[in-house]
Image 1 (cartoon, rainbow, N blue to C red):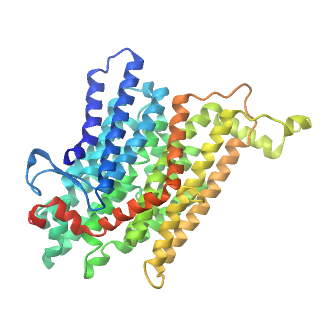
Image 2: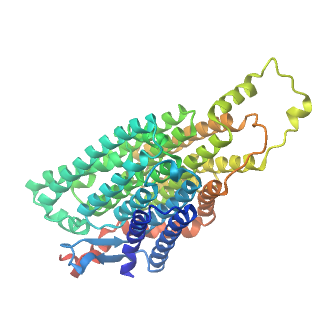
Image 3: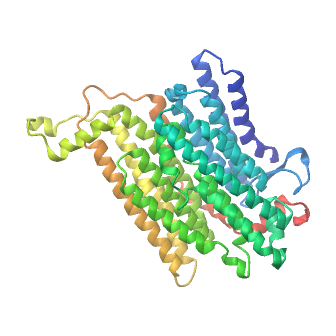
Length: 528
């Protein structure tokens, strides 16, 4: 079972190499078929890893020491349920984005497929690695690939946004190295399980240096998560990127959330003494501020791609709040939420491109103006006003938009509501009398849902309350199929909420009991 842990890294690496070797293939269908086949294999491998760990119990993990070097001295991959969940989510989103790009976007620039698979490899590696240094390596791999992808298609707006994106991520990488150096200087190790073992024994005179390293590392993670006030690069970058690239980018902010959740639960969340509250109040404040900024930004958006960017900020703030609340029940809801919010946000980016192909933005604004204010020179008979036939393509797109809106706003009966309800109910039941933090948590989640609902409804009116263009509306199967599949998975998550919550509840309990993780990774009960 342990060898399964490296397969989600090897498959996209093989795909990237194959594209570089066969990049001059002139047969378009073979190139597309090869890349889709690699993505399907990646989904199957990730699903296999997920199923194996699901059947092995909440405390199971696949530990893979590269080169068979002893832990904690060698590089180790650790695939527990949390890592498997994130890898499977990434693989599904990558397949949907790749299929969508295969319709027309892949040939808008050069080396799209190698960069795409390299980004997927970096994402999976970041979720599977068991030490901080290789987390940095995989971070740099995914960032290097994302620099090329964000520029894919060219254009002044993309170049300007990409320069901001590259600059801020170079600063984040510099902070990452500083944090790693400080932690290594005080603990003598970079293995995350070994850091958790050593942290309680750090001398009092070194404790401040260790916490400074953790704080600097946390800033780097918060930048990558898109947290306020370090978020300013995200809306412009995501809305300017090519739609399939932006869809895959929806999972990139979750890497920052994953890193914070992993280190927080391993090192700080279960500590006793004054270090128990290290960073907790700061995370609560940043989470509320990120939700507030994202919600207000969503209200100001008239373009669906920019709205989706702000919705990613809202989801980032919600996840940071869940981490800071430090309760297994809240973490259960957060893990459920991270899957559905990522898939729905990716679908929104793709849906925006489909809508623009059918009805350009200028026509949408003009049409909604005529619907609201009328045209004095236009005379419509009663039959035309009440009997217009709505094409099947427009109906399908409107249903996709409605499902995405319900999921992102957290309205029943879909999975977004179940995720938020789980988090809120767990926060209320986590203690006898709800504290101020509980009310801030509940208020932020509920009010943000209202703001998101208003934004989505307004954008839906601008898009769908229009006079449709003449002629039939045609959708490319390779473009609409990934959108329908992503949203269908969100609906399926609601139908299978019982088993999903059981699985995620066991995962959350394992996360909040770090001794199990330490004992599995380190030999002889943590004596490295």
